Length: 190
Image (tube, rainbow, N blue to C red; front, side):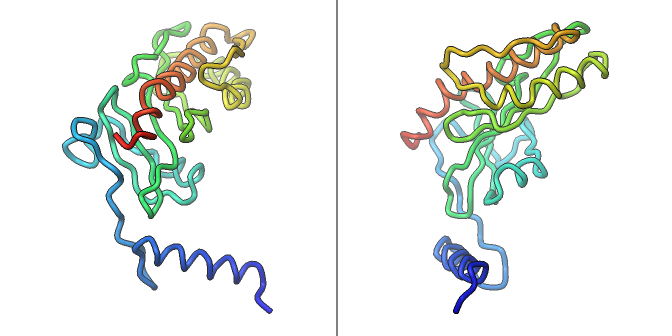
């Protein structure tokens, strides 16, 4: 009798081979869907560098990213069959970076295909590290419950109010833009 682990391995191998893989090595990566005017000239123009460790953690089946530039630079994350798994975007590119106490607080956001926040990272800034850590720790769980277009707001963190407001604005702004401007186009195959 086959163990569940062995059965899953066999099913995974069958899917892998069906998607263009060959036994014993990594599959030739299929090109994700493209649309004239939306992809960059090269696979990565370095406007948005993929955060591979985070992508691997959040999207276990991911094998390829592709940079798009319309309506702003972002990455589509794809599996071995060319199926879209999610997105990586940065507030500096999406125009959603807000200022905290000491200046701009840019964020990098990872979203699923419905623009729901899976995770975020605060990028280089001049905020006080202790207050920024407090804000990030407090907001991590709350921002993953944010739904674009929903009525719920995410409250700022006491003692780190300006820093947390900047993080909230950057993350929710990206989620809203991806939901309104990117998801509909990706679903249509543009």
